[in-house]
Amino acid sequence: MANMQKKILVVGGGIGGLTTALACGARGLPVQLIEKKPVFSEVGAGIQLSPNVVRLLEGWGLSSGLDAVACFPSLLQVRSAQSGAVLGQLALGARAVQRYGARYATIARADLHALLLGAVQSQGSTQLLLDNALQFISQDANAVQVTTADGHQRRAHVVIGADGLWSHVRDFVRTDAQPRFSGHLAYRAMVPQAALPQGLRSDVITAWLGPRFHAVHYPVHGGEWLNVVVIVQGAAPEDMHQWDHDANADDLRAHLDGAASALQDLVAAIKAWRLWPLNGLPHVRSAKELAFGRIALMGDAAHPMLPYLAQGAGMAIEDAAALADVLSTPVLGDVAALERYAQTRWRRNARVQARAQRNGEIFHATGVQRWGRDAAMQLLGQRLLDVPWLYGGG
Image: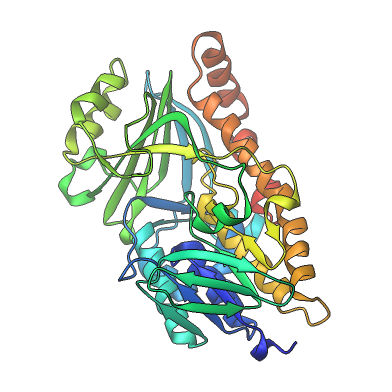
């Protein structure tokens, strides 16, 4: 089937869905994208984009767009959340380009979403359909039929579920995958750097490791804002489907009792916080969990990542590139193409999921484990912080 005849329907207009549309468009594959919201929007936190991801975005012509809104920190530093001491560092900047062929970026999620949306609209090969909530999916040997809440029916040769952790597409192809609470809560904030005392402003990525919590902050919006997240262990909120909750700053400060003054001062300087419960799925165990005949899952719909390796958006973007590659391969039929995508992606995604979970355990270590962690970081900081198998590509 020629590319112009292939009908691809993407469900979800977030970062994963837009990147899939962009990657497919770059391969000459027109896409219909349905989004349940009446307008495209993205709220929330910052995102770290490691070289494996930036390399793809730049390959789709987004280098100048990233230059306009992202930051490219020269350093990742890890500090003790109790003493404030620097435990280890990883040079980024020119070293990342030399070693991995691309920069390491930090960006506000809304800025990345706007950049992708603009690129998809400029490309002109994607039909963007807003206010189209998915209601039902069925497939036969020849096509997939999608029904939206307004009763409209569409047929496609391939459907890509890019609709996030609480995926409705996944509900139709898997009955064994319901999100579960991780036991961790993320307090998130973004604040203008000009509103902070000079000593609290930063142009690098800083991770603070403490007992039963950790914090990360880095610049976004071209360096004008600071993105801050503090992740603590705690009880789940009542509404698990609502990922964005009002946060009580007093509760956060209680979690940081005994932390270094620099970290406490930063938290105290920020008045507005949001609370996100961190949910996930069991780690991917086989290709059968990503492809189901003519339907495939990608990004958080397939393999949500805990944020301890900063790869949630990154793995979705890699998925999008892989989907475009297989769907544009003429010798592959649609079902075979999605099977190849699943075989290509599941092991890498499972490895990232496992590494992220392990990082969370290390970041929150207590007692003897914490002492061992800090000692290892001081001795082998750069070797422990660099991730060649990840940053080098799939």
